[in-house]
Length: 359
Image 1: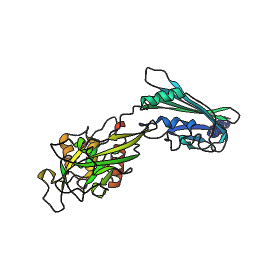
Image 2: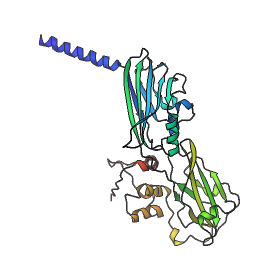
Image 3: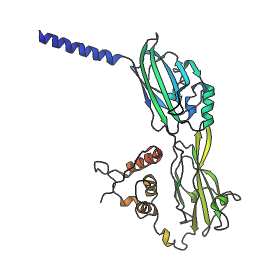
Image 4: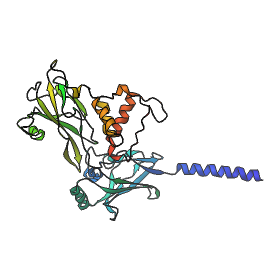
């Protein structure tokens, strides 16, 4: 008798699990790196193209008739109350997984109804960067209006101001006119990078003034989304030659609240030498390793200034370093480059860094 009860309990448990497995469920998955969230990504009713992907919606099972109600609330600060920015309801559709930018744009994810606080949206746009906390709530209903599942998530927007800096050339370095590597830190979400360079007379004008004096030798050259380039190959308005002093800046063009904005690096000056000309001065006998310079920028708050100097001046090169993971297993150069690029792109979001040197 006890055995019969035990088997019955197992069968009921299995049946319950199977029933639960079949219950429709909606999940909201935030996508990585939302530090530069653009408010236009929420403007579903404006039918904008190329909107930022904010989240992915995962619905199980797929292929059933259902609809979604969603809303987006914004809280300016911890001491303020939340305000509803946007509320919507989709038409009935066959459930599937999709990204936020498909809402109101994909033919099977059209809106049945929507409510938008345009005054609040304009107020946020006037503030510039979207900051505070955004809460996204999604609710799944059957085609008959029966509530099935709910998912929500908060996005806390610290939005540190993005910056850009030049890694190479280093200040007051010397380069052959036929080989001038320019390398800069990436800016998350940059649409393109522009390069401006000009010659200048040291002592007669400042580097910044020289950039706006006459026609620059390189005048806002569009480097696309590259983060390094050889200046010797860039189209110039006139030739430069050995002995000249040059100042260069890199500008990142970003989208901020639907508008384009330029971020300027600090100017860097260097000197040109003719091919086969005089040897470089002792202060530049070491050739910096661009990737070690990138690593130095990532570690600048976690290591000594002496170690940073060795990374930047070429004393330590990538070929001199053995890279291992937390299990002391070797990491390939390609994997290290991917890790380095990730750290650069997400550096403002990293709370702390610890550098542990090993013999």
